[in-house]
Structure formats: C-alpha cells, structure tokens
Image (cartoon, rainbow, N blue to C red; front, side):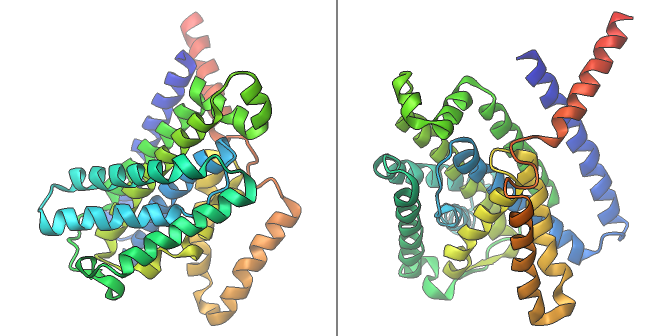
Length: 318
C-alpha cells in the first residue's frame, strides 16, 4: 500500500511538471494552435482508452459500445451547460454519472454473456443509443447540437486524464482489481474460488462508462458542436484499437498507442487519401510482429518508480 501511494505521488509530480512544460510551449507559440488541438484530443482519447482498458484489458470483457457512453456524457453535459447553465465541473460529473447509470442498466443483463455474444450485444446497445439521440429533436436530432460553450481547455483535459490514469491504476492494483484480473484469466476458476464474477464485471463496466461520459463532456465543450455520427460503431473500434495495440492490461501501452494513433493520421495528411492505406497497414504490421501490443501487460513507468523508490530508501538509510 505504501509503495502504491509513493508511485501515485511520483506520477502526480511528473504530470504537473509535464503540464507546465507543455503550457509554456503553447504560450510561447512553439506549439501552435494546430498542435495544441491535437494535444487536447490525445488527452481526451487517453481517458477513453484507459477507461476501456479496465473493461477489456483488466477484466477481459470485449465491449464495442464505448462510444455510446461517450455520446451520453457529451449530450448530457452540453444540455446542462446550455439550458440549465450548470457550472462546467458539475456538468461533466452529471454526464459521467448518467453514462455510468446507463452502463449499469445495460451491464446487468448483458455482462452475464461471454466472448463474442457480449461484444455483439454491447455493439447493439451502442448503436441503439446513437439512433435514439438521432431521433430526439431536443438534442438536435440528425442535424447535431451546436452552440455548446467552449469550456474545455488544456488544463481540464490534462488533469482529468491524470486523474483517470491514477484511479484506474489504483483500482487495477487493489483487491477488487485482482478479482477483475481473475475473471480475465479464468472466469470458471474465479467462480469456483467464490468470486462474484458478474459483480466485478459490472463494476468495471460502470467505472469505464463513467469516465467515457466525462470524456464525452470534454469532447463536446472543446469542439462546440456534436452530432450522432461522431459516436458510431467505428469510433468504438478506434478505442478498442488503442487498447489492443498498446497492450491489454497496460495503462502505459494505452497512453502510447493513443498518442501514436491520434498523431499518425494527422502527420500523413500530405499523402491525401493514401494515408487511409498506410494507417491500417501500420496496425497490421504491429499486430503481426507484436501481437501482445506495444507493452503487453507491463507498465513502462514501474521500472522508473522502482529505481526512484530504491534511491530514496538508500538516501534515508545513509
């Protein structure tokens, strides 16, 4: 417990230092508005990838409806700030709670399923959410919702990203996290040991849905315009790709893969339509030669933390 607390403090310190460095680069114009926009989108996508990793990587449940919960948070937070003039933090919290509640309602009947059946069912629910939003005129319908106030800035997305990583990291290494991992490794054996596998699957699903809703609120208040097509099946596939490419169960892998896959399409714009060939080709190559993902189940920063911890222990002893 003491070690995990020390790792958390080190990660917070590193995050704060990184924030001030990036803020300085943006304020001085070294990173222009275009690169600042990409950086904001990377932070939002990291929140979505890390939260989905809790469901797919830690608990081992393949879901294809994460974009649906993102859309719930996006629309709920937007309506809160536009019509009820709710403060931005409360609007984000409301979007996350509503997405988590819908995740609970969906998870109770569906998470008793396994494998392909679960994936197909969550895909169906994600599309149902999108179609329902499309047919509600109060939410803009198919035209989309415009006039969303520009509340999201780099500080919001960065620190919520750090908060999400810390929460998922500590959950994965708690007793509940170990129970979730046992479900991933062998659900039948976990049940035989007295673990309520459905409970932990639902717990991971609700937590992941909550953070997806928060990310949706940040996304909506950054673009200032959202429409149902932005949260379709392909969006969910993008998030699954981030998790699989980074390594299922590795938060560091999710961060790395999300950054790479968010920057790659932008960096290949000079190739016009050919970039749509290079992007999937790069994914095929990585999956061919590194099927476990960039990091597998390892965390890049754990070695650094251990070295820092050992160094501090030596200083104290001397």
